[in-house]
Image 1 (cartoon, rainbow, N blue to C red):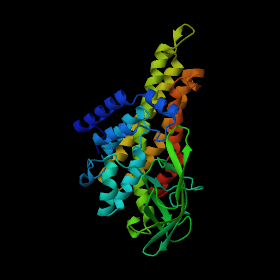
Image 2: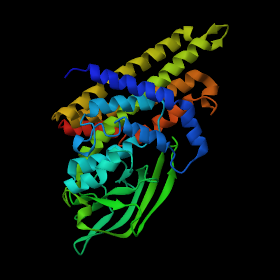
Image 3: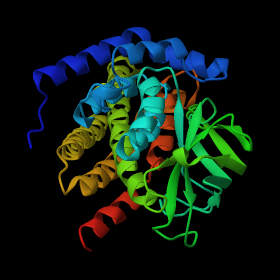
Image 4: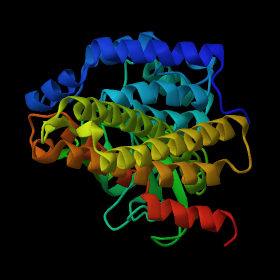
Length: 379
């Protein structure tokens, strides 16, 4: 496995970085937060990203996707992370991969094609109160109703669920609440009778929602794949979304580090620039190592997923554990090096601390993924 970029990948990385640097600077992220709009992101810019083919990078060409892989997807996510872009990349990967991996041709044509074109937003509703990263904790019920299903339950922290046109809902069809088997994934239109949602406010200003299902009836065509093997499909999808998130975290680490180094070269104390202090040099050197280790782990995991490597799942957990800790280290140290002003909203560095905290806990924190890695390794 070569952890270097090909010429095509270098072009993708440069194009994405130039695009976000020009059209999605940090000032835009601040403006979107302060505006508190209904979407929380720029719908015209999202459409432009779709036109560039970035939304469809990991999806098959048959639905308008790029037919590429996560080695390319993380490059776009890394560039997006530098500007803390709030557009719904993760929601698209979560719901889109569920359909791509487990859906039939009709479902792919109906949902994936507009999703890739940026004309529809889908959200994956799988987390519940008390789940705490456990992917098999599901109390939402899916009961047989004629030839279809009746869904009842409550989902939390649904990424971009406040603007979704439809939800992919994890629901239990058999067994007990914490059983690994007996779950299915269902496509539920957001305007279906019995569906309600409540927007949630996150510390990083990203959009999310609670979704309530009160006897929602769907037809047999709503079921994605097997009615009892949804848990395995969810695991595969979350691994892909997790490595995409790691790509974004890598970009945010890099940007926070660059901003901090610039500040160290400009800020004077005791008549000298603080960048000349040996103690700060040591601390930033440690952060540099954390970032480079994160980069290697993200590259290895994304390539393993693309190649179908048997170690892919373990490498994803390794990458998320590394990125979760590194992102928090970089953000915490950056704010501290800035001093008291780093805690004020006037300075952009605080945005990276808030995003690092939210990203650290998304799809499992470092402790969860270290335990998962150990379990996959047979410990």
